Amino acid sequence: MTSSSRAWLYGKLLVTLLAQKLIRIGRNISPSGYILSVRGAVQSVARI
Image (cartoon, rainbow, N blue to C red; front, side):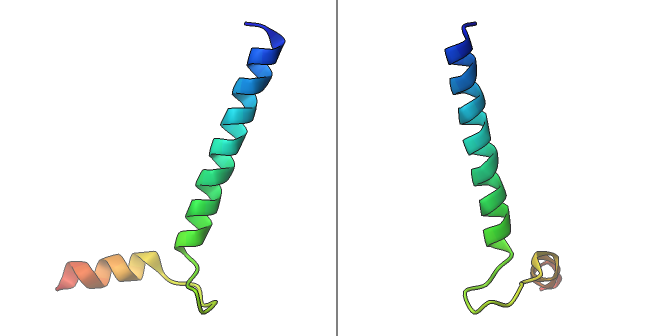
């Protein structure tokens, strides 16, 4: 593997990991600024 293809692959991996991190953070924040409890929401739906 050449160094340019290795750098491209590492760059793609970095972008993917950053995107996953942002998605994970975004799921826990509501638009009004309050942090939502994902586990509480799942448990309340399961009880119904």
